[in-house]
Length: 615
Image (cartoon, rainbow, N blue to C red):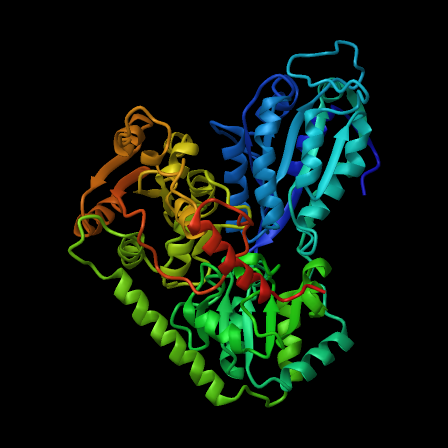
């Protein structure tokens, strides 16, 4: 270990540390921090930007158009790299920082790593109050960056240059920990960034990082073996943790060899290919009738790498009352939910050891066959909903079906929020594991375009296919421009249904009148349609307005040949959806003048009577 010192500003030292962290991907040594998404302003331009400019060849900085969207792009990059490589997002103090809070919520909800570096107030307070400083009269140590405390796994504010020596390793450890993984935030006081300090050279020694694989407790594993072998109707639910553990092949082989039907969560979709012998479809509110039917009869549920979100559990109405849970999860918090037998550990290690402990046990063949039968029926229903008709406006299901058929074996589908998560989760037939990204843990509108940019950057051997509704597009679209500037192509399919169609559906389903969701039902002078193609073309993209499903097929073929981001816009039906079977608990008024609301409340009381008590 080197024992000398080197004199650097705090910002220079931080950047040098980031440049000397490495990890291994596919057998190759690569930088742990692959790059920086940055919008510079006061608080990060004079010191941090000076340090980043000097290392462009090692740590490239990409210019975003909005602090939230560039952080979303960083998150999508980390997801595409299965949490093995991390991007940095930086902003100035003030609104630049608060713009990133929403994205931090996305990363926190989805257990995804991103390092957020924001400018902060002056540590010496001499020039206070500075531009964009929000003063708290009773606590001058508070800045807007305190807002990140609710949505980050690690939070720190650097008020002295020496503090990064202890802070940065802790931030890295949190982002790489399979149990605690999530966003790390470090606020950089403006005057502290400029201060020179004699840093120990050992702090900058190159370091290789690896994601740990904690083994499960042997006694818990033995209990899991006992419980599973007693099951008459076992069911596997594969979550995102399977993917981040790189355990897809092991889980797929385990389900097939043991004859256990396998359902997937939204984050876990893509664990297996669509036609895998054990696959019974996506689970829950935006899942399949096949998976939900199996869940309703299962007596033992083996949940692997899932936090059992309400969309997976049907707000805890999807399972038989006597169903017992075995939960394999790296996070103790997630493993212990709902009286589960908690097997805390890495998914790959735990499933391998569980398989070894089961001997020659297999699930009952009649139960395995039921899973195949239910899934076959689900595929027939999908075929019925996705086939072309003479209707003047295509449905989401039909559009998803066309795009899915035109997608290549390795093409990544990416979407978020609105009606598309349901239609894509239900209707996208996975051709290769790891080709599905639906941000629905935080249901963040605007993730789509930004996420497509980040995913394209993460794997330049494939072009992401991004599907967005018109509502999400209008909320955050400027990274179309970013992707054209940087040369990271995506194919963006905009489904224009005239507003927030799926939330209008929920509003109507729970008895409410259509109000302020579809453009035609909002307080507008005159409804009109946005020309999304011209808008995208104004940002340098290519585009085509699509008039029919046949036209969409031809447009998809064309989009694959273009040299930059290409946008296809198609009008879609706001009222036709693939049916779902699981319930969802949302607040419905106890009293109302509307007969429809009163009827919906009665139905909702029936839903709540079926809920599993979480103790």
